[in-house]
Image (cartoon, rainbow, N blue to C red; front, side, top):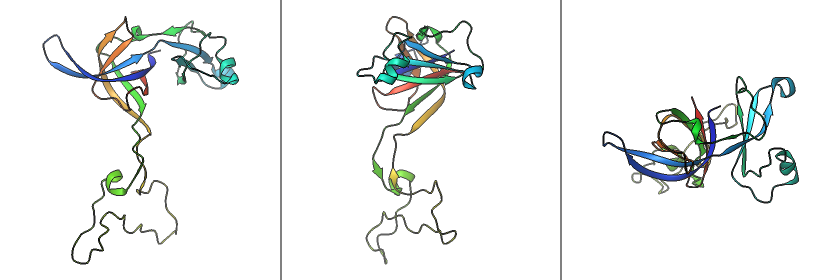
Length: 203
């Protein structure tokens, strides 16, 4: 199973063997511990639940759930798999050794939250004219256009919360792996702020 949880550190650049400069995002990945194994017989589907980090003040429910794995994770995530890896059990740990330089991965994170935003900033709407009858409020959304069925359809582009949503960037390439410090360098940008939790999934 080639999936790890990690913390985004930030962007830097490295030099390849031919001297080319490569922009990479450094991620403190793993180690991740298996906290639960779900099977089709017991749960209706197959999945592996992994924990990452060191959590504080765990609730009694979470502490009891991870007691068998002997960890206190900060983040718990479930990875669905079509077939469970052989001999996997609660307490097994994964680190950056599951990836090598050149692997293609999908990275999922929570994008930066930008608060409440209007239609111009959020959806790149045009502003109205400032002259010849313009009333001065050039950033208003204008007509919504729903005479029938007299309701606003879900997904209508309007003002609202911008950012802070799950984003997946696909087909990124691993350009750097540090086994000593559990660091992974992914070529390109990864969603989310510094110290944000991301999921690295192999293809």
